[in-house]
Length: 243
Image 1 (spheres, helix red, strand yellow):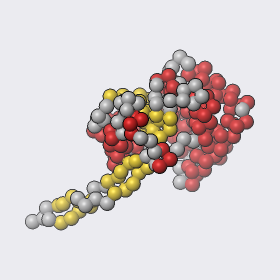
Image 2 (cartoon, rainbow, N blue to C red):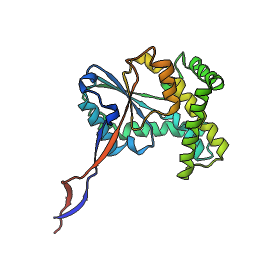
Image 3 (cartoon, rainbow, N blue to C red):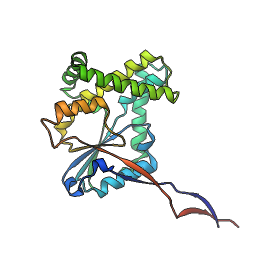
Image 4 (cartoon, rainbow, N blue to C red):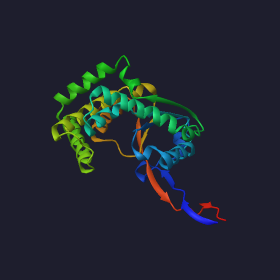
């Protein structure tokens, strides 16, 4: 017998800044945001996330597969048309749901999966989108939050050589992404999500919307939870038989 590569093992936890007594999660509904194509929503990272959700005593989990929202990123990374980017992003969502089925079916609570287009077809979405677009034009603080977040994201894309377009085009696509995300966020409280779970902290734009328009009216809903991943050293490794 010879030792081969060890299986990757990751443990997920909530950072100390999110430290909450697990008893507070009992009977609570958590919404897990999924960014298709991002490594922390696949394989051992996603498995660790599901294990943490199970241990945290939530009563229900909704997985929001943010597939068509990624069309803005696809357009930034290539010369694809909006129509092509939509088709590609939907295919990414299909692939994520199928690929990760063996993991999320291990949830020990009631769960469901919704996809980004669910929000875009809601009766109130267009009203919320107009509200957000007007807020972007009229509210200097929100405008700055959007522009700052858009610059940061566009800059990361540039750093990793993921951009096929120029600075202005990429910035405009990032702004469109954020405005759509914030408009959808205004609909989330009506689904009674108590917590929003994501590997990283909320961006400035979403934080602004939450603090100004959601938290005052829904203090028990959409409380942010972030994830911390720790790579574990595994003692058990796969073994290959030799003659």
